Image 1: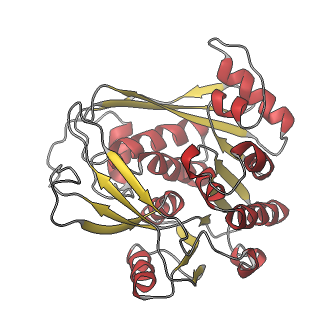
Image 2: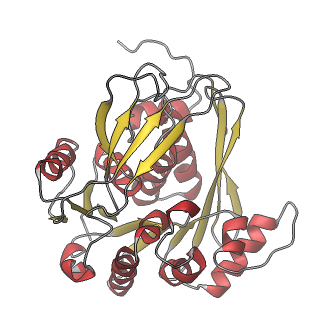
Length: 337
């Protein structure tokens, strides 16, 4: 396949941010944008020059039209957007400073995406020109219908020979429809080619066992691959947080043969860490498709994530050149002329 097109699936929310590090109680106005984990991944990849389509459901009103127009400005293919219902999920973001943590308040109950009908999606048609599909545990958490649509998508992608990446990190408080992550995520994850998870996720969600110690991630990954033979690689990210403004991040990958670790990135002034994990995945997927090397992929993904911390908004706008400079060790911040 000559095309390098990635398809992602998940809810897009309206983001309302308090300006200038103000607490929600202080603000008289909020900054409006849009974001969502899977769309953020697609936006990163489009920024790197790949074709990217995001599949979602927006309300059939002016907010839905605004969100669709926002995606078009990012260069994303919006042919997978369905307009239905009358409510868009949203979240309020209060940016932390120093020892005060950032906070998020979600308001996404009864959103258009939560109320989707799986029959709306012809996945054979949606995926016909794609070579990569990405989903996350957040999507499956929102409703039974969203989980069903996600399962149908990965089944079709697997049948079509499309690489499937899965981020099974989930937010426990989002599961409100009578099912647990353990009920839903293992079957969807079983169709994955690449899994983003740590050893605790693999144990708690997928039921695999491992011995505590330095080899825990390798053993959990090996057991996951034995349980789910479609999975060829397991990736994990690590963050050490010193304050709201100072974090150190890294990543690692087990490919069935060896453990590969990324460079560490020391971020000493964080502007906005929302979407940093999505930026890692966008960079990592780019590495897998274009660089085609596991070490280069996690180095590129980690550097992409680090630079996202310096950019306002949900998605990463760092260029390939900026990321490659950081991978090469350039942390000077010198003006480029």
